[in-house]
Image (cartoon, rainbow, N blue to C red; front, side):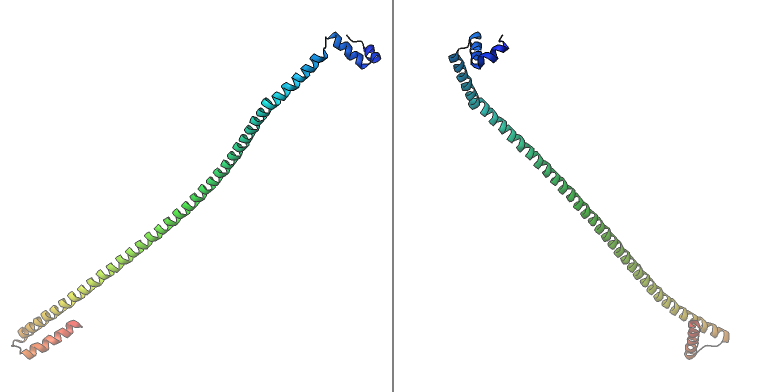
Length: 181
């Protein structure tokens, strides 16, 4: 062990010599070890440390690119989802519009069919009234003839004489006026 007083009194150079002698230090061996150490450090720096740093930098770059790609994918996904939602909204609006148009078209068709049915019914009613009027006029004319024939026949029987054509015409006309009134 080195005495503390020796360090102070003998100086630093003596202490270094004393250590070298005690531990068997050889200056040539020491410098060769230092040169070997520096050479190994330089070789490790050149062939191990720099390639490892390059690989680590490449990995860092790839990770950064991957994160950027993931972020871009998230943005694209968000954009796609917003476009999807927008397309759904537009499709829903178009569907609602088509439904409204279909309802309006159905209502218009129903209204037209109803109007056609009403017009057809009115036509049928008009034809029926016309037919009734024609039938009524025919029955009324037949009734006039029959009443006139009955009046002439009754008058002839009641009076007991044979009526002339003038008398028959006059009685027929009077009976027709009476029936018409």
